[in-house]
Image (cartoon, rainbow, N blue to C red):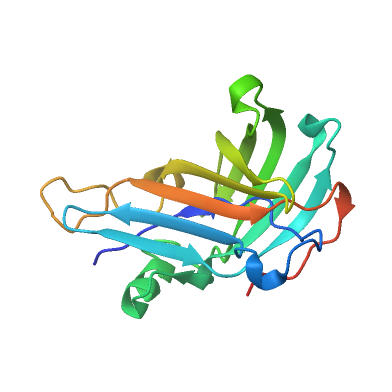
Length: 200
């Protein structure tokens, strides 16, 4: 069966969520989202994790390298628009949500770019997914300073986290190893903060 994403993938994932500064109406602001896509030889599947929460956020705008954000993603909330596929993703073949119900994403070591790339930054991401922990850099763009909105993306290898079987070159429905993760979120305000409610 065709399926995807580990993300975390989140998980990617994830990141920063947050809250508005009140300067724009809620309906005018795009919602936070953790999205992913993966493909086989035939098609590309797109998905999203609907439920997550910020467990810890300590934002230091004067010294961004000291900032830390922890996000917990509920893997059972995966949604690719096809329930049969989603059930397969939740099963032991992939996320195995009974044994590993959540993914934990920690962002730290924020590094701001300079010059023409002043609206971009890189963070060190530690992703704990499916019983495996990996650390990698992830780039983000500052989409809207007023609402503290950022967007970032990274490509992960699902087999690095022991998710799904090996790619079968001659099987057209075999899921490719690469999973593309995209996060669009609002950064919490400066200083330590309580975990806000999950988006859904």
